[in-house]
Image (cartoon, rainbow, N blue to C red; front, side):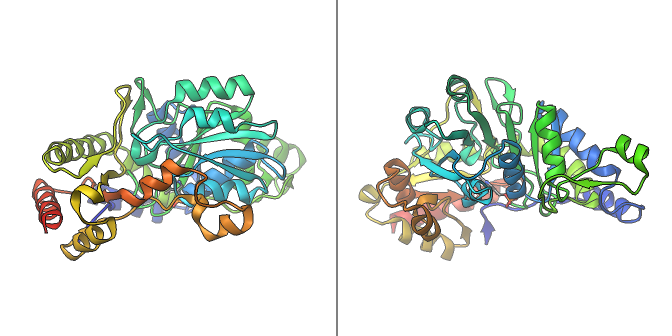
Length: 378
Ligand SMILES: *Cc1c(COP(=O)(O)O)cnc(C)c1O
């Protein structure tokens, strides 16, 4: 089975991890700061705070912004559940808004229409790896005095108007799960240019304990204070060693993903009933996913049939995502239902993610395209 995505680990990565395993620090050591620095530099992100997952990164972001009961946070319907869950972890209410039909990125007009006096933040999800319309979103966020968060778990290595992902919102979150661009096994990070938000997140990832060295030195090295309720969202040093090593290959990998996407694009143009999502010219798409829409009427077959046949042919296709407001948890807890975000709901019936990752060969690509042709001509 050719998976829709997978990690890419080489001997250098392994050596980097082993080196840390032989050192004095497995966690809370010097490699964490090195990884944070490398990520901040790569993304022009200012300060980076590395944590145990992308979900933890989103939770840290919600905490740092002071999201709590009674607060609303605007999120797109077309995303992974964790984007909205992070709001709920803090007792806030996710407000689902629709996406644009061509790109499946959050619709700025829908964002503006959803803002109330309770809105604390807008989370823009760079779906599939394409950055959202950050200039427009920035304007809206500033006008209404709400924070702008980028869930950039799909778009590391992407750019918007030549500016790197990681530098585009007040807080930018990343995931280093093995299906993402670079991996630390499990892991995540937030980038921000705001020193105070970064400091809140560092406290939050460590049980709410302040690690002010100066204060410790003056009051005795044993002294620490827990100033708020936090979590253990720490990442380990050997994970960060892997992250540093992986980051060096990011540009190469994004280039390869883009190459695969452009080849798919050419092939898909010849097949009626299948259309790629649209890409805006100001975006440098990082292609975490390669998503196509299937037109069941033209194909004479529905998505479920195409999906099953492609899986049977050895293609690890997937569907990203079930719109979050349709999950039973959100229906039950927040009273959401079908009809709330019609563009996302309609897209959900038609989308399928074809494999794209750095280890995919040209031969794999030909094989996949041939399988797609066979399946839809059946
Ligand atoms: C992967 C992902 C997350 C969660 O990241 P984990 O590291 O798996 O916790 C959140 N949001 C989006 C859009 C993602 O793709």
